[in-house]
Image 1 (tube, each protein chain N blue to C red):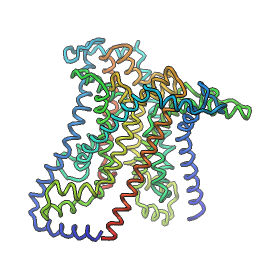
Image 2 (cartoon, each protein chain N blue to C red):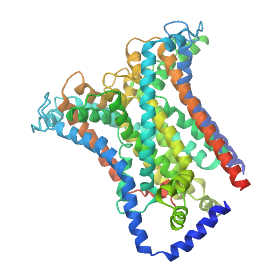
Image 3 (cartoon, chains in turn cyan, green):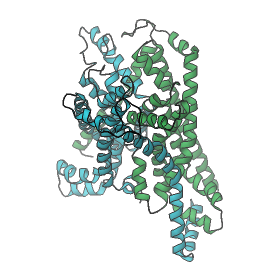
Length: 306
Length: 271
């Protein structure tokens, strides 16, 4: 450690000696250079595919005439009152809103504990919450099917004591439950980052001055933790709007969500232009929300630059 | 601590443990189903058996998909770590003109529904005339995993004192030397967790693989196709194996990191 300090001291002397202007130019080019590989990956793997989707959305329906035809028929058919695809949009958006609300309530106490009171346990508990991310969601959702199934873990256990399991599988409630389950880490960790940004002394000072817990929460904790909470809500909303595994595995297709409609258009229906038009509408909703929220955030502060 | 604080602390612990039980409950249910003898799951399990485990291990089909999944995850890890390392330096280390914009662009693929991204990639591959195989899935995984790993490493970079790099450069060290002797050793915990994230996220990914592997199949894809049609207890058995493999890797990764940290601390203390 003392070695590092010595090097740092040497550097401070050196910085004083070297001309500041050349250093600035040196940094600028290096940062841009370092961003190139990521930039290229995202250009070829994110921007170009989305541009292709946009191009397909304006192609002749049920054709593969991308870049060669231009028509608004796909959008017209989506907004046609006879088309019931709007129901899928309503289901997806509604389920996503409910997921966000439920997750905010479920995750807040845990995030508070991780940021404040778990102490040396918080690292271990974080790992326990991260780990399920590495197990594919359909495997975990299928585990819930085994739990709720007739003669499954819940039903079987209740039968031992003379009851019977509730019939929850293949209902919208089960889909919502699955979404809350799958997206928990995406709410929990941004929220923890946000709550960790609230200075402890500030809360203590308020308490010493006689502020009630509700007042502290409303006036200090929540406003200061807002960036993290906002990221968590945005992230879970966006992921839940595009979720499809939950409705397929736990919902038994009792509800057709929008991503499922898009998938049907691409596979069974072989109508890529219609699928693209739907995907483009979804992208616009998601993109507008993300960009609007991200524009307000200072990522350096949230992620810990001092 | 006064009494009300103690009570709320207790409630928070209880809630956290309750949610953790729920988080792992379906994984346990899958493990039970994979170890029961009967073809259709029933609880309480009447007869236990490891038959489905051994059948899954012996199946040629399973061996093929495991190899595909491993190949994808390994290559994704290698490429993602290199790309994201520089990406993280651009994210958190250097002050440059486009940095604020770049930081937000990097986040966009994370803030995007993966099934839609997978379909968009399929369309794009089709438009440029690339036949989807497991190799295209590597690229698809990278689009999502590179930003995640960039963030993971960037968090480490934020705690890094740029003066160390500058000092070495001012003392006459070349760029490559600085990278090897100063930057990498300081940032390796971030790089290491980034690599673990890359491998495990690729290993468990379903929505991107679904649309971009073409005729090839990965473990999550195969499991899903069998869940929809043709369930046997091999499905939860393989699911459990895959989960255990991920857990072992995470544990080993954590232990190696702890060991190296201790050795580094020992070296610093003796020096």
